[in-house]
Length: 92
Picture 1 (tube, one colour):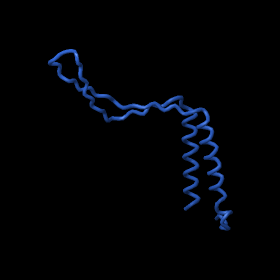
Picture 2 (cartoon, helix red, strand yellow):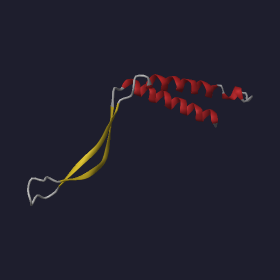
Picture 3 (cartoon, helix red, strand yellow):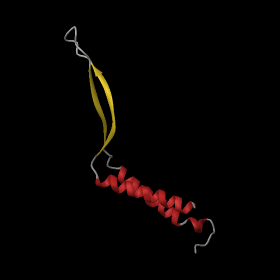
Picture 4 (cartoon, one colour):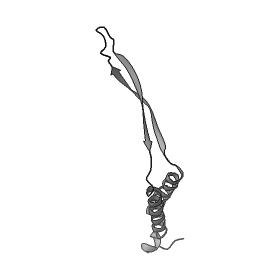
């Protein structure tokens, strides 16, 4: 069980590292919108306006992040492959 767990974690780290290596930036957009009430103070009888703002964030991974994710994922995968030998259980 532990071997499969560590193998999955290492594989995911490698996949996320390769994805970060291939992209320059990612825009995370949300379906939810926020309603903001805007008032204009130019007149006495001015009605407030309701404006909807969409929430989006831009993620730009640093240059060292993909390489560290790939390297740590490789170490975890190699650790997972040596687990049975470390605990004295023979594979097979």
